Amino acid sequence: MTPPAQTPDPISTAKRVYEAYVTKDRDAMEALVADDFHFTSPRDNRLDRATYFSRCWSNSRTTDRFTFVHLVRDEDRVFVTYDLRMKDGSAFRNTEILAIRDGKLVEAQVFFGWMIPHEAPEGGSV
Image: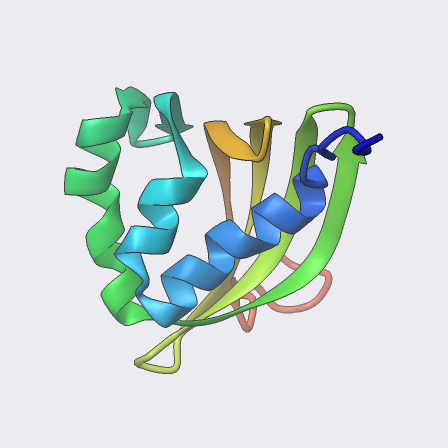
C-alpha cells in the first residue's frame, strides 16, 4: 500500500518563497504562488497574481538576504517577522501573514516595520 502524499509544511513553503527572492528564481516563485493568490500591504490593496508579479517581483533585484526573527504556524497561516538586508546595505524589519494551501502561497499580507538600525534613539521617538 502506498502511503498518502504529505502536504508540504507551511513553514517550509514560506521559507522557499523568501529564498526565491534571494536567488532571483522567478520560476520557483511562479511554482509557489497559487493562481488565486492575493497580496495586500499598506501600499497595495489585494493585488491579484499577475499584478503582484508585475509590481512586486522586481524587488528581488535589490534583495540580499532575509534573517527570520519569527516563523509561527497557525493552521494554514504562517506569521513571519524578518530582517531584510538590501544589496545597498540598508535593512528593515517587516511582518507578514502568509496563507498557504497545499504547498502554494494563496495570500500575503505585509505590515511594514522599521529601518535597521532604528531611526529613533533607544527609549525615544522620531
